[in-house]
Image (cartoon, rainbow, N blue to C red; front, side):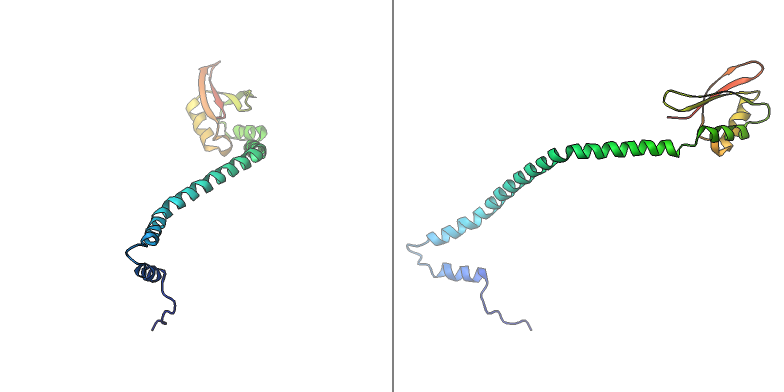
Length: 165
């Protein structure tokens, strides 16, 4: 059984106060209460807008002072990402060893180099370019080399291969 309430609720006290007002000449208190109740949402909205304006101004100040550091952090993350990509890339020696192991009989490496953006390019002379491509797809060290074209050479087809960007 819930305990008996010893103090009346706010609504009960308001009703009692309004009932005690003389209806003839002092309705001003009731009107004032009604105006206050109606004005509460507007006052709340105005307070929220004022708070929002202050918070936005504070955020802008923090962003202005933190911008150089945030730019430095972003540049550092980008440099780390680029360095990680370079370090994760197998070296030329490993790729060339894998290429040498993967070349089918009769195929020879005729040229190897790097593009200006540091991608490996190779050219392989092969009597059967399709057999060469199939062999390179099977070798794990050469799966990232992409065929960029072929041309006729002395007694063999010259197949150009390049690392993708």
